[in-house]
Length: 483
Image (tube, rainbow, N blue to C red; front, top):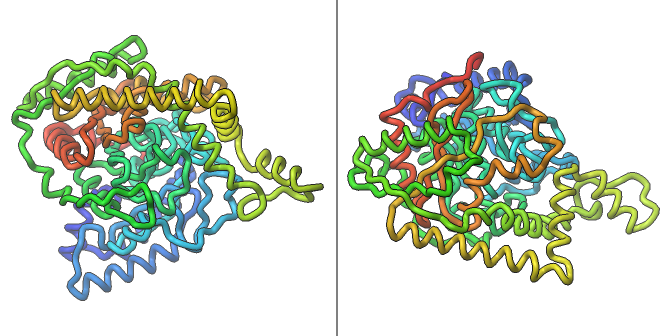
């Protein structure tokens, strides 16, 4: 049962081949057996899962149906879940139990999804390797000595190891797409505002977006259907009708215009990954797509702009964690200033402290215009590049990451080297565009992803292209040895 996709689970439940309770018990036992190797979960919710599974079976017995009714999933541990620890992978929130459900959690629960637990992540979603978690690094199931990518690495590792069929993630600069690429999954970052951020603990509010991680585009369509939609509780949520993503999967790619930016194929890209990307282009051409070279001239400025904007917003968002209202509090503070300093110094890890410091500096008097304001202007130029490109093409294609997964600890002494792994994904967040990563092959036994970008609210187009590609390739069906 653990090899079933979400779509196959939906058909199996509808045909009464097994019950949600049976499936849930199988997967919980599998997590207990295999996750100690991976460290992909922070919290398991066995009692909640079995209660939800029994309720889903009862709803089906009464004639209800739905692709997510009785389907097991997990949530990245920054989605608030009522009465359950929501830690953000941080000592700061190790003892925090949310008093309410995030909108994404509530919507998926209403659709009948079964929550198996909360997955490990880089602390406050800050990282590209899932090594900054207070609960320890997550291992890549394709090679346990390598990283799974971050910050949604726990969700990615759990799905890749077949511990469950799908999971939620969040993407601030590539944190769904990058771990999807490094673990042989399909991961989708929706348009900014498509999925509610209410109850999703913020890192950088103008960049964060929740989305699905699964093995196939078909499964991502099912999970996104349950997540997407307008939320009056979220001021950044956009009131745009949600299409039937599954209905558009089988559309023809005949005449689809694909743009391949020349800037993607510079010296920083592993040439073996470049070859796999070109192979993906050829596959799509066989399906009727038309490919042309395009240019995104301001892409070179994306990383410096991102690493001003994101830390600036993080420094503001994380100021609420002060040892007073909730979260970690130091012992025996001598006064209020000591309480603030020690609670934050002891509660936050090194990467979070680094980004808070960078952000506070960029926003400080005398530096706001020189750094933050200039970064926002570059952000507009990057968006304009995309808008010009989408006048010529329907989607943009390129590598998701410049390298396959690296060894655990290999980049810990050089944070900038890890930041550079996000070079292809960051631009979609700066522009607010939807992006998808899908499996494209292997380098040295490690998975490689190809990235697709589309105009605003064209998630259906991305899923259609990925699904057609996956009908004609088998990369996404490969399973890591031992899992």
